[in-house]
Amino acid sequence: MEWNRTSRNTALLLLGLAVYFLFFWKKIFFFNLIPSDGNTLLMSYPDWSIGRHFFRSALLPLWDPFRNLGEPFLADPQTSVLYPPTWLTYLGDWSAYFKFWTAAHTLLAGGFAYLLAKKLFSDREAAFTAGLLAAFNGMMIARSSIPCHLAALSWLPAIAYFFISGRTVLLGLSLAAQWFAGYPPFSLITFAALALLLPLTGRISESALRLLKAYLIFLGLAAVQLLPFLEMLRESARGLLVNSASAFVYSLAPAELLRKIFVPLWYAFFPQSDGDPAMVNFYFGLALPAAALLILLRKRDKYGLYVLAALAFAFTLCLGRINPLYAIPLFQVFRYPSNWLALTALFAPLAVAAGFSSVKSPAWKRVLAAAVALELLANAQLRHKLWVEPVYFSDIPAVLQGYPAGNAIYHTPLLRASMDKGFEIGAGGDALLLRETAYPSYGTAFGYGELGSYQVLSSKRARAYAARVAAAPGSSLLDYASIGEVITLKTDQSGKVLPEPVVIRNPHAKPSCFLEPPGGKIEIVKKGPGRFKGAVEVSSPASLVLSQAWYPGWRLKVDGERTTPGIFEDYFISAPLQPGRHAVELYYMPFSFLAGLAISLITMLMLLLWKAGVLWKKVNFR
Image (cartoon, rainbow, N blue to C red; front, side, top):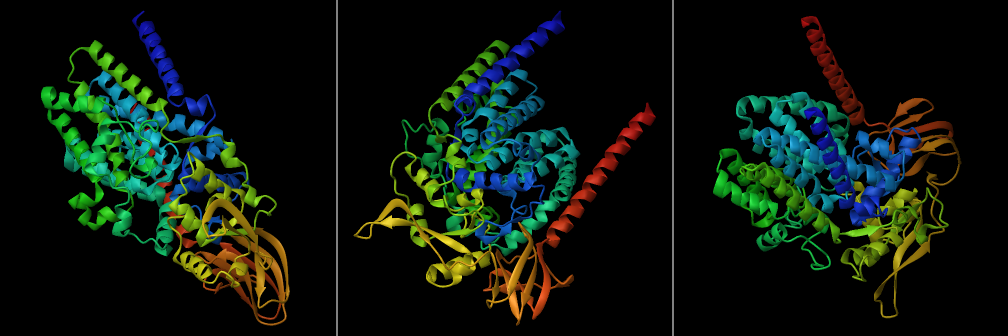
């Protein structure tokens, strides 16, 4: 009878959580809306669209032929192309993607936050409240429009749980999963989180050794992307450390930080927020200050005080420029001090669990859990961000209609400068203009190449070529890039820029592969992302040029013989040819990927052999 009662109560609890989840994310599940901002339009949707093309075409996702007229795809973690849950989303549409993504990562964050809090504080009701806070806090809402951020953030409680539990292999696997989810700054912050958790393990030296082993597993498993990523970082214009101006972007002033701790961002009451709302907003509810008071006034145990101190330290890191720690170069590896809010997303639920566990009455703890749930649900009801219908992403912009996919587009410096400044033309107005101008990198989602895409790790050569085009707009540089459509903004008679896109056709654009100097004949046998195969006939020395960016890893075969590819105009990949007819093959297969793949496969094999050995010992022992 007792077992039946427990099972029934568990079933009712799970049903209640499912209903709660659906109402918390009602816009996604009941109204088929998608949370959106510039990152969703210009990064997340193009990444997903290009990745789905690779998946459905059964192609190795090494080379993106669209952004910056070609760049590595798999090497960029923000594509999430090596993250297994992403593969499932390629089977459906963009709307189904958000439904699955939100459900899976809410469950991941909440479930493991519950297990972690229960292990640390041995209190089921307090742990349940911690799970609620981890799954439904304001930061999850803020980052929901950037799926790779949401996924990487959601792995943090699982990583912390496996670390505290001493599960080394599962910890290494979780670290790799977080990396593949797609946001490297959160992987760096996770290392800081684990360092802060060391004192909670009881045996610091043993835990540190386990952590080292877990990171070796992580490095081995993630090598297939880590090595190409490091190569991409080396080639990028960004560099390992960012400048001070970038490092302090969206630093939270002390008063603004306090306001965000105690007051939720509701556009109906607070239409303005310092910084990008997707990056700087969080809100954990009034449970957090209440738990802090309980820890300070009632509990005063070392775990509770330590967690509260770690949380306060995490908040100070969001202050950026006024925090003296930012004088250390390591704190300038990534932009946005507000990324350190990921630490608070781990320690805030733990602080609430520590505080609520000091309450003796189970009934009162359930009341507190219900109050937290209601406040979080109320916080989710008012508008925190722009919500749009799926067709906002999937309908091709008017400026691209009638222009064949596979060709390239170019956005003028006038357009980019005006859009970066913003027109402030009403709610969602600028966002609609981003879409209607096919702003970089939105056009890549529909198969259009671009010069000067929205990419943090754009190569030095890409930036230099775009600067040359901007300095000489009427030169043949646009022609070489196969750019047949230039997109700009309309101006009135006084020269004032208007929020209305204008398309200028370029009749002199060269095809996506051409001979320089002109002459001869090209027969294309096969052409795809990062690959060209054809027959070329020239009567004098010439170069076959692809309107694709040169990058380490491009390989060339002429008449079956390996040779060194050339670089045309210091940007495009080319094949130098002597007079005659030649079989030419250009393909992208970087050594960094091959070496990383070998390391990852060896690591997986070693883990499987180790697991098989453990099972074999158990069977023989029995």
